[in-house]
Image (cartoon, rainbow, N blue to C red; front, side, top):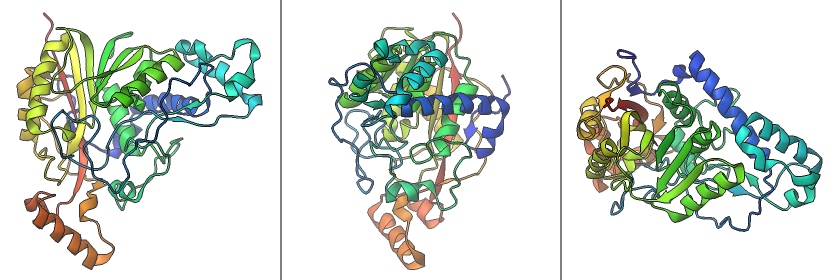
Length: 379
C-alpha cells in the first residue's frame, strides 16, 4: 500500500476494479432493501417536513462550519436521509423484511411481529437522500447541469436519479482503500443519514455522523433506530470536533470540505489528529478544481497544505496527490443554451466573482472529485 496510487482525482474506470465491483454489489443490495423495506417501528418521531434546498438556490451547505456563509459549489447542499411515504404491497412486506433481516444481521427489528402486516403498512419506507441532499427523488435542472453534458448512467445502478456514478465512486474508492476493522468506531463528518453512513452502519460499524443541522441528525437517529444499526447523529461543527482524545478508529468525509472556508479545513484537520486513535485512518473526498470562488482546492499543493500538513498524519499510498486531468462535472454558473447565453453566464460569473476569474478566462469551468488517505502512526 506504500506506493499504491490512491490519492488522486476521480476516474470512472476505477469502478471496474474487482474490489470496487464487490463493494458496489453490496451497496446496490443495501440500496434496494432500503427502498422497499418497511420498518415496524412507529414513525411518529420522524420529522418529514420538506427542508430540501431548491435546485436554483445556491445556499450554504447544511454541514458547513459555523460562520461560513458561502458554498463552494451547488452539487451538494445538505446530505439528508429521507423517509418517504409508501411501501411494497402488503403481500410482499413480510418476505422483504425477513429477507433484509437475514441478509443484514443487524436488521432484526424489521421483522413484522406475529405477521401483522397492517401495522407495517401504516409506517414509512426507509431510503436515503440524493447526492444533493434533496428529499425528492427527482433531480432539478441545476443538478442535471452539474452532472455535465457528457454524463452517462452507471449500469446496474438501482437509483440513478438520486445516486449518480460520482457518489458510487466516492463510496467504493473510500471503502476499497481503507483498512476498516470489524466493528470499528467511525466518524462521518457531514454525512448524517447519508448513503455512505448507512453503508458503514449496515456493515456493523458504530457510526457517528456530525452536522450543524439538527434535523439531519434526527434523521440519522431515526434510520439507526429503524434499522437497528449503531448509528447516531450529533450536532457539531466540523471545525470544532468535541470528542475525547483518540476516540475514533476511522474518520471519513464525503465531499464536505469544499463547503468550509480554508481556515475551517485547516482547523478541522488539526482536531482530527487529536481524536483519531493511533493506527487509525482519515479518508476524504472533495471537490477538486471547482472554479467557484469558494473552492480553492485546485492543485496538489492545496491538498497538502490544507489537509496533510495541519493534520500531522502520514500519507497512505503514494505520498503525493495525483491529478489525472479528467474532469466530469460542470459548474452550473457557466452554463448556457448556445454560445450567446453561455458567454453571458461566464461574463456574469467573472464580473460578480462567483467563479475564479483565472479559470473563467482559461475556459476551465469543469471540475472533478479527489480522494485523500491518511493515517496516524501507532503509539
